[in-house]
Every structure is written in structure tokens, then in C-alpha cells.
Amino acid sequence: MFLLKTWRSTAFGIYGYMNFTKNGFLEHSKKFKPEDMQIQIEGKNCVVTGANSGIGYAAAEGLASRGANVYMVCRNKERGQEALTKIQSSTGNQNVYLEVCDLSSVNEIKSFATSFASKDVPVHVLVNNAGLLENKRTITPEGFGPRLSVIFLESTHLDFISLCSFVYIRFELNFAVNVLGTYTMTKLMLPLLEKASPDAKVITVSSGGMYTSPLTTDLQFSGENFDGVLQYARNKRIQVALTEKWAEKFKNKGIGFYSMHPGWAETPGVAKSLPSFNESFSGKLRTSEEGADTIVWLALQPKEKLVSGSFYFDRAEATKHLTLAGTSKSHDLIDSVIDTVHSMAALDP
Ligand SMILES: NC(=O)c1ccc[n+]([C@@H]2O[C@H](COP(=O)([O-])OP(=O)(O)OC[C@H]3O[C@@H](n4cnc5c(N)ncnc54)[C@H](OP(=O)(O)O)[C@@H]3O)[C@@H](O)[C@H]2O)c1
Image (cartoon, rainbow, N blue to C red):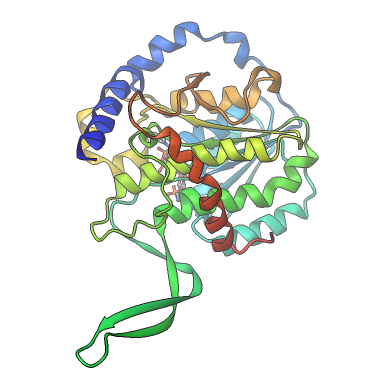
């Protein structure tokens, strides 16, 4: 196991250095077709989560500049309003709206979905971009339960004493936003996506970091030594496997599901969560616009050109598994992961 983990990290490091940096983007962009981006999407409604900063901001701006009606879902009203004003002024598109919602809260997502549904607008594109890498174990005020927990204690008089208790399990923050938030948002947007069928798309911003982890059912990182980078990789792996599953499950609903990797981009999130990486790759990272390029590209392309369930990077389908990394079989666990996440979100069957 140690050797396998070392191999995954090494392969990821080499592959990432060769492809995910700014140089990788410049190299891959030699094959890009400029006409792919010269498509106007007036009248199409695009919902972008985490749209006030970094890659989400650049994606929202890219979509607004092509005439879309953009709904920016941000957790902070002031930051969201500031970003919205900037996008309206840089694109000249006034059809940009702010929706305030904290994606770490299932309850807030449910309220958002109810109020958004009352607008009765079809959703052509949902960009699940909001995400984070929190290095310290942090729990949200929400949770899951109560669940029956049985604890066995050794005793001198009896073989075992069992104590039964009902415990309420709080959500770990990376998981809450990256997985539970993405899942809940997508599920609740399905009726509005169906209204935009057969044009509807769900684009989930995953990460190449997922190459370092197989899919696991340990959703909330049960180990004692919390590792935020590993938890993030696990979350991002789930997003890729979820996308694959959604594509299969909803193939007759006229919705395309795509996951993607933006490459390594210089954003406030990277500066905060990975300061050493940010410093050592200074000058080598992509801009947020370069990171958002494939999101905008996916949103603009005719669906016939795209493969639902695939993982995209730099405007092309990319592998979901690195050679000999032993991660591909793990996707078999996705049904069990979905069952758990669905009950955690307390959604209708
Ligand atoms: N940059 C990279 O190199 C890179 C590489 C691979 C994947 N990604 C992925 O790209 C996406 C965007 O990341 P970024 O690098 O652009 O980081 P960023 O600058 O930190 O942007 C993340 C966005 O998500 C929002 N967000 C975080 N937690 C939220 C919550 N609880 N509710 C609502 N919104 C929330 C942030 O809002 P606040 O401003 O309020 O915090 C921000 O708008 C993420 O999914 C990330 O995993 C990035």
C-alpha cells in the first residue's frame, strides 16, 4: 500500500508538472479552435456556484460575455455583489444576478432551490464550481442522525458490556461543500435542468488531485490524523465518479454531465490552502481565466460533440485514472456512496 501511494503521488506530480501548469495550457492551446469560443448563448440561463472568486468568477464572466443570463451563487452577499458589479461592467451584460447561499449547508441549498424554482427559469448550465481545501478538521453546524452507535467495553465481571447511544454525526467541511453541497445542489436543480432539455448541462469542477485517491466510502475521514489534501482528493474523486453515474442514470433526461480539471491556477483558494505550493510554483500557474477555459468551452459546445460522464481537461476528454494507480475498480463503490450522501442530504427518494 505504501508503494502504491508513493507511486500515485509521484505519477501525479510528474503528470501535473508536465500538463497542469501555465506551460501545459500554452502547449495544449495550440490545438484549440478559436471558433469554439465564438458562440453566443443569449437567453441561456447559467448557474455558477462560488462565482465571486478565482475560477468561478472567470467562468461567470466568460459566460456573461457571451450573452448568457448568469446566476452567481455566492455565500457572502458583499463579495458576491462586488463581483457581480465587476462582471456587469466588464461584459456590458446586465443579466447577471446574485443568489446568496452557503454550499456547506444542506438547509441553505434547499431554501435556495425552493426560491430559485419559483422563478420558473429553465437551467441550461449548472456549474458546480464552489469548493475548498480546508487543512484542519472543521465541522459544520449541520449533521446526520441520530444514528444508533454501539460501544463495547471490556469488563472484569462480564465478557462485554455494550453501551448503546444515539449520536448525531456532524459534517466535515471539505466533504460538506465539495460532495454533499454538489450532490444536493445538482439533485435539486434536476427539474429545472429538465426544463432546458435537451440542451441542459451540469459541469462539475473537480481536480487532478483526484488522481491520487481511489473512491472510498470513508466520506468524513474517520482516521485520527486528518489530512486535508487527501480528503480533498477523495472528494474530487467522488465528483468524477458521481458525474459518471449521473450520466448513466439520467441519460434519457436530455442532460449532459461533465466533470473537469482546470489545471493549476493561481487563485485566492490556492494561496490560502496550499501556500508552499503557491510560492514554489509562482509564475508557473495558470490564470483564473485559463483555469475556467474548459468550463466555458463545455458550456458553449453542442452536446453532440461532448461525451456525458467524461472527465475533461484543456478542451479534451482526459483519463480518470493514472497508469498503475489502482483506482479504476474503486468506482464500483459509487452506488454505496450515493446511498449515504442521499440520506445525509435527507432528500426524497
Ligand atoms: N485553482 C486551482 O489550481 C484548482 C485546481 C483544481 C481544482 N480547482 C477547483 O476549482 C474550484 C474553484 O477553486 P478556486 O481555485 O477558484 O478557489 P477560490 O478562489 O477559493 O474560489 C472558490 C469559490 O468557492 C466559494 N466557496 C467556498 N466555500 C463555499 C461555501 N461554503 N458556499 C458557497 N461558496 C463557497 C468561494 O467563496 P468565498 O470567496 O466566499 O470563499 C469562492 O467563490 C474548486 O472547486 C477547486 O477545488 C482549483
